[in-house]
Image (cartoon, rainbow, N blue to C red; front, side, top):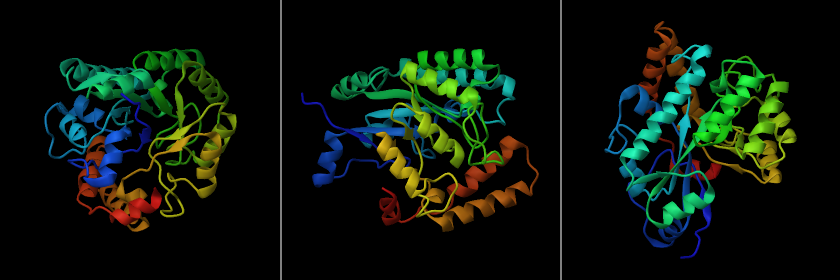
Length: 314
């Protein structure tokens, strides 16, 4: 059987069936990889079984099969409302364990993939590959450099094949685009972490990072990087999106930028609407977890951007 070419595309809004015609044929031949999904947290904190259809979610195993997705990166993301820094690492381990339990319970549908060869082999037998990406190096906390590197190695053993250097808060690696650390670049600890990621074979993910950290990291990196869920800042002026210079730098590096299908990252008007929702919710003085849930529910009611706008980013 011929090896299918890779197609790296984050599918935040999955179709329920593959398209017909030439485009559908390309989709069928390609290895389709969703590089980022936050469904993991619903398994751990919501008790959701992804083996069953979940009408209010964009990702579950039936949707992945119907949409022709061959490989899913499950995001290991620890929200700062879920634990204090001294509990981040332990919380991340819970999320790894939950996805591994899903895999064990559904061997005919999904299998753990450690390598690209595993992904191709699973695709050849019609099984979805499960991979892991750690969203934010804050998940390595607590500890000093020695402990952080040990935690990184454990994440790799459990299946992590990329790590986003920051989420929307600063991490031991450097500054984030999402808080007042956005002027900070790569730290000395961050250099050690990138060195270890290279040694392990983990991909450096530059979504979410501050502009200074992006430039420091891509200059320091000796291997191709990715942005697992980032769109074009020229089309939607959002700090998390990438400038044209950044996009070209990733291309020169040999890496890949995977478009974020979230409406707020594709169109300034939608981002402004989401920010207005966040401002209203902040005024309610809810607990952090309740605030996050209220924003999630309200923004989910916003209409999607036109498909043409998404295509512009691609």
